[in-house]
Image 1 (cartoon, rainbow, N blue to C red):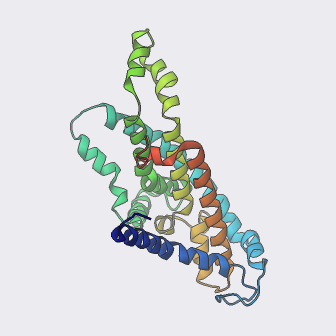
Image 2 (tube, rainbow, N blue to C red; image 1 turned 90 degrees about the horizontal axis):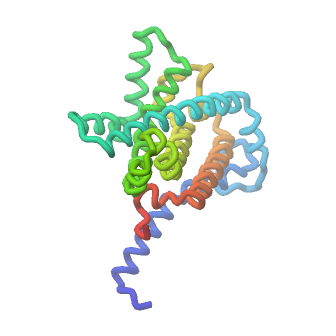
Length: 268
């Protein structure tokens, strides 16, 4: 009650911004329960038939399967490569270090459709076509900065005296890495993989250029669907997306402490 009017005004502004960002998701979720074939809001009556269609539509099922395949490969490769680069950038000084870091983080500022289009042109010239390998590579490029960021922050929070103590007791470098470094980096590694998996599964603009009918992921299948139909099926599928993503992030935050991993938790 002793807060200043400016403090209250700033808090209300934050609440207004959050409400502005969340409100469209709330509208989409409610619209998914519409009983009519035309997308309207608010619904005149409620039904679950569009959720059933979203779960049984063949293109969505194939896109979900393809998305899982790409997600597992892309997030796992990004974790392995990103963790190695993060370790090298954090522990060693070498020529062109900042250039390498800029290249690895470039997908944060380069539009994803540019990455997808560039990889499509490169793959076509090399005779690969729109294969799963090209899709996975595209996703690795896009999600790699998030893995590097997560592991790098975990390395900054790691007490190197533990490594020195293990080395002083005669442990070889590989054993220090396996028994000391990797277990302590586990929250950062798991968080990096989780972020990469979520981003990969939801990636659309880059995937649109490098996927074919046989390799299209779920977001691309959703895009193709909306070009032909205007029913609430996509609203229902989006509601499922929102619930699953929010649940995964909530569970990850509870067990891993994402605030500490992302270096935004000032309590640590």
